[in-house]
Length: 317
Image 1 (cartoon, helix red, strand yellow):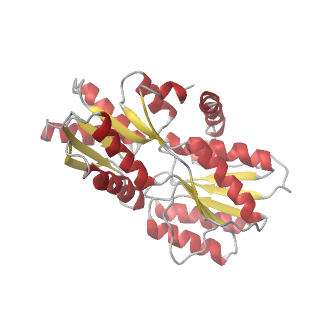
Image 2 (image 1 turned 30 degrees about the vertical axis):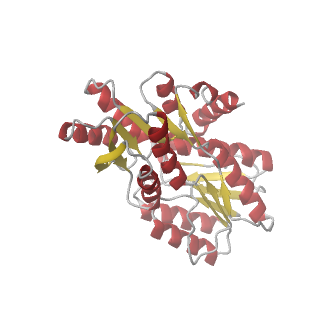
């Protein structure tokens, strides 16, 4: 089933991203009597969000909703994201699904939607936005994801002494949780030491440059932990350019391109976060919110698993 899910996701991504030159797309050709859901990711840098959108659109079609997708050109364009929220409110959408890595921006966005009495579902996060009314949080526990990377290194490679270079994302709760979970869990293992960290802002090219710089400054590094797949793939490219065959590269997302690279031995492992399901379940919760259904638990957690060469065939098309 996982194989079919990845295959279907890739097909939907190809369709849904054809209109992303403006980083915006919708379903204006459909019947106008359908209720509309605004789906606002922080950007489209990572295929993680493409998969999330694919899952959201598939479930929305099933439930009879239009989905309007807008995203800033850059992940740190927080004003652009707020503008997308304001535009969605003006259009009178029935619900807003949103994700951003910046805590303050998220709080302002939710406050704007609350003032307009539009339900808000936050996706790709389990971090509560205090002082606001959020219907639910759909995503994986990012701190646990970081912990799982440390556990993977500490148990599967328990006889190897690791000198770790960490590739950080933009400042914010995502970086704090993915790195913080790793830092806390690694204390349980004597074979893991962080020797370098550098920001790569969730981007592959910056990840490649950061990994190159870190290794050239400290050649003892034998594993790069990217807080996202894109940065981990950048580190893998750096390792290839530097002819490093024994350096591990590990990311978080479980994107199809990363899974392919794991199968090909280019990347070592990734935390598979099931973004397609995150998109689907976000729309399910939007539907519940629109219909006034009460839920007992706002935290809608999606389980994760480490994928490496041993089990990648289960998740690859």
